[in-house]
Length: 365
Image (tube, rainbow, N blue to C red; front, top):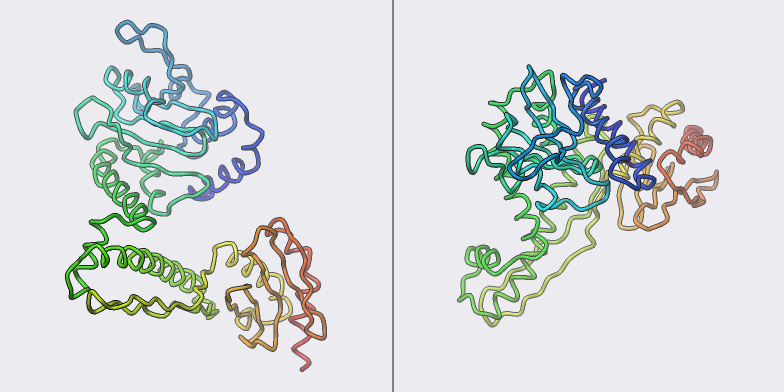
């Protein structure tokens, strides 16, 4: 099984079992041990590789235990402290990691709740664990950029020097990304002034700053949406299946302090990953009836449509996913749509006959 598949398998397990886990011990058994074994590749039943309840007396602290110590070539390389799944992680949870880090040979420590993993090292001061992680990921929301870095921590690829050399860049890139996320959601005065000073010709007064606070947030949100849509369109471009997106009209910026800011926008349509997955399921179903290259997709504000020959008069299905209750719309011989509630994407397979019939019906026209 490939590394990404092992991550996906554990993520699926967390989705299915998370609500049933009530204790820290259950979290370790259900999620953390499989992560150590299946993802990192260490044998959790071999005491020469993984030591549970690792004891290392520090000063007046006697008999304290850390959840797991991972060894390679007889040396402790990684320390792991676990909390109950769903419990927020903060630096106060890492007190034992701080104490044990400088008295062992470990250069990597991990704080986790079975779903979210935070990786620490000693970039700021030798043999003293940093307060901020150099790497963080959520198994239910995996960043593609994190996967290659996580692979460096596996038993087969473990190279502590390589990990530490990359940790500095990872740490600060991660912090910059988090800061950008904050600014994109709620830009502060310096962020607004930075952009306003580059596009506005007048004096940056309080009134202008207030106007540009709104404009900056709108611009950053539209920019992110454009980037997401481009990636999604590229993902299916190999099959020549375009997704048509209604982009927002450019914002007209003020030229003087007295000018009135007027923002004119069309509805911005964002294609979600779930819609793409539903589209791919429908393609897999109806390709037995028509050439898969003829199956196209169009996204609108109210639904995601699947068409034959990219023709609005040849609808195969509609995905109504932009609401709490999701629906799939199927079409009869008169092209009348019937909406069916679904709970998961797998439910789409239950409408295979209707989907095939709709696609095949246009062949006789």
